[in-house]
Length: 363
Image (cartoon, rainbow, N blue to C red; front, top):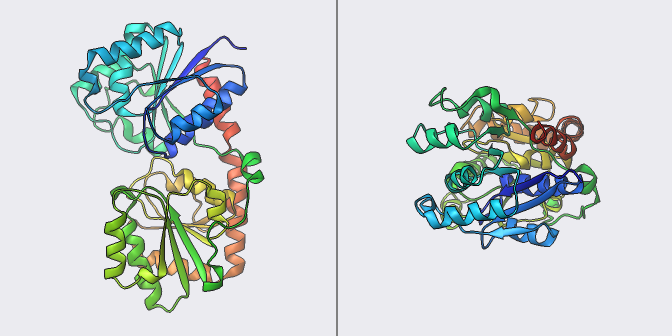
């Protein structure tokens, strides 16, 4: 046992890359002998996975206005004090507004804010207070995220205290998972797919436009869109309006991504921005080449022409050309898939991420 008490604070009701990172790192540190706990919301997959893992947890619901509730801040403070939390790792801006002051009141030695989006911090009075008085260090999940953090105010935080830790995947655990296709449409032509929340930043409407081009070019294909979100009905109507609803399957939320990847030939990423596309390394770990818009951190993950293709942001026509090229060249499809798997083994493993986090929190 290390004696260090580490708490992961994430009250998100939804599941995404940040929640996956929190769970993987919490589980990994516990295996290494750290005394790990979590603060979670009253619902959501992150809470459920923490509960099933046996990691002790404390429940509190946080909204954007919770920082105005001094009783909630004191509740969090009492948890931190009562459990002698040494290091607090916070991932959500709304959580930081509550947990930051609570940790300061509790005298928590290390308060780490993990930034997962390549979006500049707002130069607001609250952020200036939090990053001057509460946050002791920051973890960025990509070089692009690290670069953009201080874009609005270079003085808001000491850049020397920002650490880069890429997301990683546990390949041993990944390879043990069931590899039978969750959805099998491969007898209907090339299968392309994407996975992510059905929200504005993921820009799924561009993939519907892509489907129109592919159909006009005579490609026999099926497009699988995995994920849930507020825009599902709107996207379904748009696909129907564009006349490609018969080519597209909205699968809903998919938990078992390996089985999803097993049923597709090419993975697409159309996002307007990404901090770090976890799903990209899941695709590469499965030997599935990627075609993505060249923005945010995608260039740090995808090597253009080797593990997939990067196309200029918003250039749906060029994305379609790359998809058609891969669909017609099975050798290139296979080779890019193999290269992607090798890249994950070298650069994006959970073990590597865990070692960097362990070194960082032990400083």
